[in-house]
Amino acid sequence: MTRSISITNTKSLNILDLVVSGAELRGWKGHGVKGLAELGLKALPHQYIQPHQERFASTTNEPNKYFIPVIGISNWDYLNVAKAICEAASKWGFFQIVNHGVPIHVLEDVKFATNKFFALPLPPPEKVIYSKEQSVTNNVRFVTRFTPDAEKALEWKDYLF
Image 1 (tube, rainbow, N blue to C red):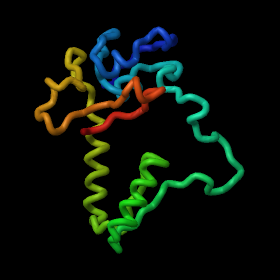
Image 2 (image 1 turned 120 degrees about the horizontal axis):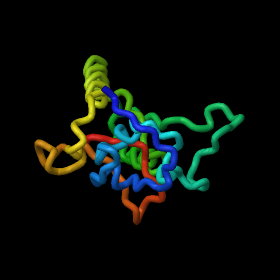
Image 3 (image 1 turned 180 degrees about the horizontal axis):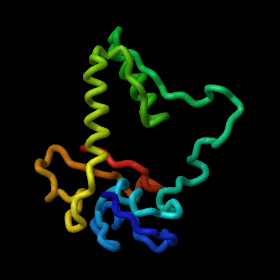
Image 4 (image 1 turned 30 degrees about the vertical axis):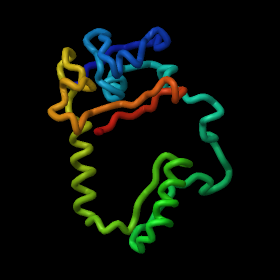
């Protein structure tokens, strides 16, 4: 069951505390972007709005102006592949690997498990899912990332680390 509360004034929220640190708002605390999305916000919190100079143009008349970098690794030439990965990661932040030899059914199983994981209901409000104490191991945790000294805005993502 999805819990929902309506919040119209997001400027008064301490989003970092609510999403990451465990500050509580009407039973919600430390439940990441998924928890934030389920709050029923009426506006995007200002902490998630990227500065204008860092945004992609919202419209373009040029077809295929933006594309996801695709890197093939079937013909493994370490220097060329490493250079392509570094370039794509630094310029785009993500890329697609093709010709990697991983069977399609394994990729489909990973997608299914990922969707299943993120569809799980949130834990009770007293448990902060980003807390180290909630992880069964120090090697794998559910996290969000924000470094106030290095980033101007929060990213709309949660991930396993």
